[in-house]
Every structure is written in C-alpha cells, then in structure tokens.
Length: 261
Ligand code: F6R
Picture 1: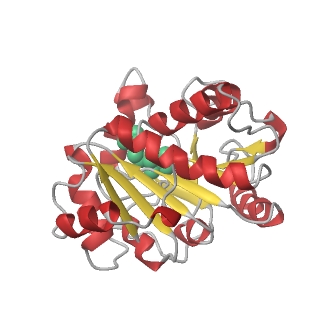
Picture 2: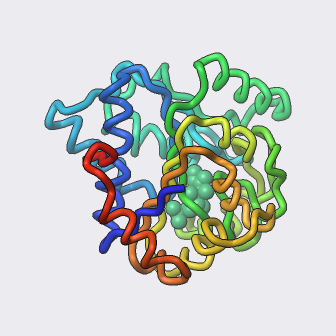
C-alpha cells in the first residue's frame, strides 16, 4: 500500500486526480469507479481543470458508482444518481450512457445488485476505484462487519453514517436507512484503488485501515489485501498513523519514474 501524506486537502485532491488522469491519459476508455460524498470533491474539481485545459477527456471512459440509497426517488437531489450526474458526468463530460449507478429503486433489488456486479465484469472490470472512508471505517457503504468477500448488495446504513450524511438532507429522518453498495469483494477486484481522506474526523479510520489488523470491523482494512492501493490523505487524517515518518520519507524519496504528476 502506498501512503501519501500531503499538507492540505487541496493537495490531496490534486495528487489523487493526477493518478486518475494518468490512467485515463493512457487509456481513454478506462473504467472508473466513482465515489460520492465530500472526500472526492477535490479530485473531481482538479479533473475538471484538466478537462477544461484539454489535458484529458472522459468522453470515452466508463463509470460505475460505488453505491446508491434505497428509498428515495431517482430525481431526489441527493440520490447518488443525481449527485453523480451533477458532480461527475456533467462537469467531466462523461457520456451519460456510459455511467451507471446501482439501481436502488428496482422492484427486485437482489437481482439488480447481482446484475450490477455482472455489468462491471462485462465492462472488463474497474481500472481505478476512487474511495472515501467513513469515520467508522466503512468503504462504499460496507459498514463494520461486512464480509471481505461481499458483492454488490443491500445494506442497512449504520446510525453513525446516517447522522454523518444528514448534512445533505433537511432532517435526519429523511436520510434513507438502506443502500445498495458494491461489496468489499467487488471493490477488491478493481485494478487500482485510490482512497482519499481529509481531516481529523477520519484519523482513527485511516489508522485502523492502514495499520490496524485486517478485520471486517474496519472495512477499510480490506485495502491491505489489494496489490495496488494508494491512500492519499492530509496531515490531519494522518495524525494517528504510527509510521507516519516512514511514509513521508518513502514518498519524498520516490524515484522519478514512479511519480505521477
Ligand atoms: C460514498 C461512499 C462512502 C463515503 C464515506 C465518506 O460513495 O461510498 O464510503 O466515501 O462515507 O463520506 P465523506 O466523503 O462525505 O466524508
């Protein structure tokens, strides 16, 4: 696992965006796993800067969102289908027909979840998966005790997750209790994972995911099983890491041929 610690959250967005840009630059038809929430906003805004400067294009790329609420309509401004359209598809110029979000409104949710996994496979798998992490260690909406083998399925959101996401709704009651999320097993099949986290509130989750034991109690620790995972965090999110000096030393001494700008 590569741990990159940078001074500010803006640096985090820029560095993670550079990784995505280098993958899309090499393969304009790349398949990108898309996260929602606050953490990846800096990535998307830096990618937009690169699109506007004609450095890269997402016109031929494909996208698969990590998760979706169950229990709110598609048109709801906080459905992840709406968020992905607003934050990713429109600003980055994805072809909307090449971007999918799990169908949290399907009559047969179990079938829709299985079909989503099958669609990712049919697209050739995800080249790079963007991830945030919850303060409770979740990735996607795989809450603590999610199986490392789990596939896309319905989950019940932890009360802490509903409270954290209440900022996007008028009241806590409006935050759905259920979601459809890519499983940890699904996420681990992506060829490259890029997890970003900013701020003190993520420090314990990052320490657990990066340095803690491999445990479904901290779903983010599944990254330890992946052969190509990059964790890009600011100093506050890195504040509980024991080997912080080592990660900074490693990054500072990285050979040029390994650097992504
Ligand atoms: C979002 C997702 C979640 C978030 C996590 C952190 O698609 O899957 O795992 O990444 O809840 O949320 P923020 O970034 O809002 O702190």
